[in-house]
Picture 1 (tube, rainbow, N blue to C red):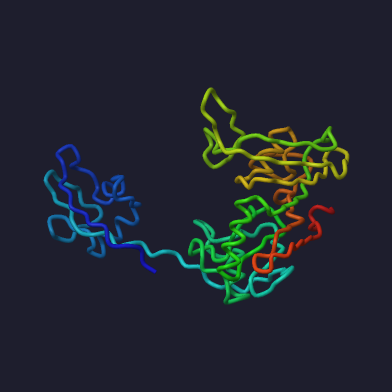
Picture 2: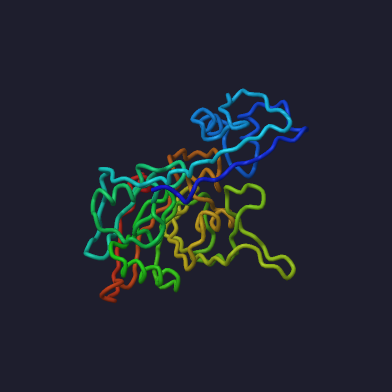
Length: 307
C-alpha cells in the first residue's frame, strides 16, 4: 500500500553550494530526507533531473542549476504470515492468550519486519482485530523482545476496544517474575518514580526527578516481593500498575538490583553470563472483553530461570 502522494522538488543551486556532488548534495538537504543511495536511485531512474535533463549522481552542481522532479512515496511495509510455532494458552472467537518466548519481537517495527509474534499469529488465524496500527493487528499491549511470558491479543474489534479500555483504566493485573543481581534486603516494597526518555542516551529510559514546578517523565508504580534469595541473586515477584516502557527494568536497576542478563540497564559483565534478561510475565488476569467474566492465566518459568 503506497503512502500519500509524490513529493515535488524544484530548487535552484546557490553560488555557495556549487562544486558538490549531486547525490551528496541531495542527501544533505533536510527537507528531502534522502540517503545518498536513495538520491542516486532517483537520479538514475529519472525521477530527479538537472535543468530538465538526466544527470549522473557524480555531477558537480553549478550555480543557478535547477533541480526538479518528484520523489515517489515510499511503499509502506506490510506484515506477512510466517509459519512460526506458537504456544497458545487460550483461544476463543475474540481473544488469544499466548506464551511469548524470549527473543521474539511482539510486532513488526524498523529492523524487525519478520519473525515477530504478529507474523506468527497471522499464519495461525485469519481473524485479528483491524483496529490499531497496520503492522499491529490485534495488539493491545506488548512485551520487550527479551521478556518472555503471557500476552493477550484481540481477534475481534469489540475485544480490541474493550481490552484497550481495561489497560487504560489499569484493571488488567500483570504479574512478573524477575531474577535480579544482589540480595534484596526488604521482603517487599514499592517503587514509585517517574520514568521518561534518558536525557543523554535517547535509546534508553530513566528515572527522572521533579525539578521545581516542572514534572519530568510519567508516573510509574512497581510493587515487588521476594520469592527466594540465592548466593548473590534474588528471585522476585513484580506487579505493575502502570505500563511505561522498560518500567520493571528501569525501576529495579534504580534500587540497585538490575535484572540478570539486562545489557542495557544492568551489569555488562558478571559471573552469570546468560543470553537475554531474566524477566517473565507469569500471570495475566482481566475481564473477558465480551463475556465480562474475570479470567486468569498462569505460565511456568522458562528453563533459563530454572538453571
